[in-house]
Amino acid sequence: MSDQPDLSAVRDYLRALQDRLTLAFEAADGRARFREDLWVRPTGGGGRTRVLESGALFEQAGVGFSHVHGERLPPSATAARPELSGCRFQALGVSLVVHPVNPYVPTSHANLRFFLAERDGAKPVWWFGGGFDLTPYYGFDEDAVAWHRQARALCAPFGADLYPRLKRACDQYFFLEHRNEPRGIGGIFFDDLDEWGFARCFAFVRAIGDGYLDAYRPIVERRRHLAYGERERAFQKYRRGRYVEFNLVYDRGTLFGLQSGGRTESILMSLPPEVSWRYDWRPEPGSPEAALTEHFLTARDWLGPEPK
Image (cartoon, rainbow, N blue to C red; front, side, top):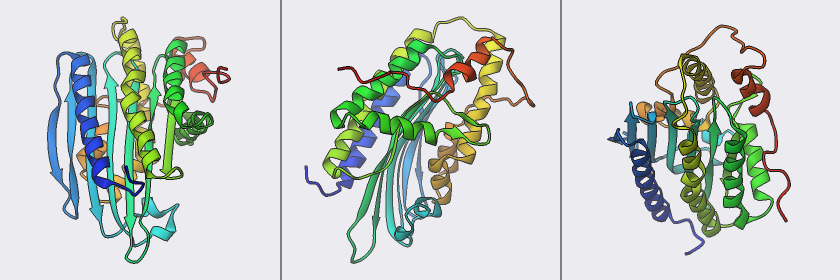
């Protein structure tokens, strides 16, 4: 593969990844199927949004592919890169958010994206971004360790220092400053990735995309049949409120999509279908609900030192 950015190769991979993910989620759910909406962005590009609703396992799951382009990057993309103001751009990505029915099954998010900015007479500027993270409502140490172990294994071929760096970036990004708490137990997050050249960066992105289900699916299978009641369901809906707050206040992808004229329904498919807020509610000390913030939603190293 040439080390020049290959837009068509990225597009083909992301579309095929969307196909694999939707088939896998349908198989896991066993009842519901994704509906697909094809959409066109009036100022350039479009995408295909797939949403599964009211399943046996998933209350809602969304897997979207988009490829948009335009004559000028929106402010959310140039805030940290002002030198790109006025550039033409192309942005491709696959994003998924899964909201299970059972409160013991964590919500999961993954995203892979590619940006290309061009200006006449200048060398193209490109970068990859993405990652995956996990948001439990009732945490399990076993799940947290397994999730981060898989993340570390996917990063390992690309450098021993990569997982710690991307984990820190994930912890910092998925943090609700106004609540002073993380959204979940993290994972890996990267942006502006171009340091290795196109071929190696693209290989890393494919490794993350191909390995995501190996991280999430075993956790789902361990927890999907645990019994729950109204208490657990009410807490799940309450904690989903934090998810909504993050996506609407901080998430760069949401901001970019809205500022760039993307399809609103597709951008906001990440929001859970049922949510609640309670004024100044606090869990009972020592309860399983209190354990979420006291034990799981803390900055911590789930894996310890790298094995020799």
